[in-house]
Length: 116
Image (cartoon, rainbow, N blue to C red; front, side, top):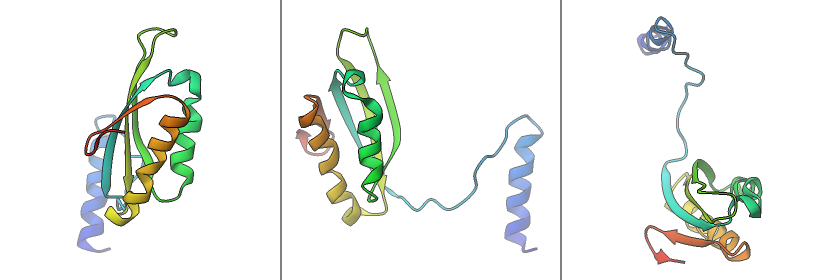
């Protein structure tokens, strides 16, 4: 066993003694990150459809989705973070949340390009 592998095994086992379980160890391939804010009736417009359409594109994936729901009748606010392998892969992925927001009548705030 290599020194690196031995050290990795130590790092995985050590947290278990305190009740923390490591569920995945590996290399992070998706490195280009982009965050959007969505505002509107996100739950009423099929939240899973929104996430699945981004993931299905095979160019980026949703890595975080946090939502604030004041009540079921009021608009919600969500933070949507996606990642991709690089800038070239991210560029076409940026259109997907914008298209979904237009279709579902959601306001989307793009932290680089302003309002979309």
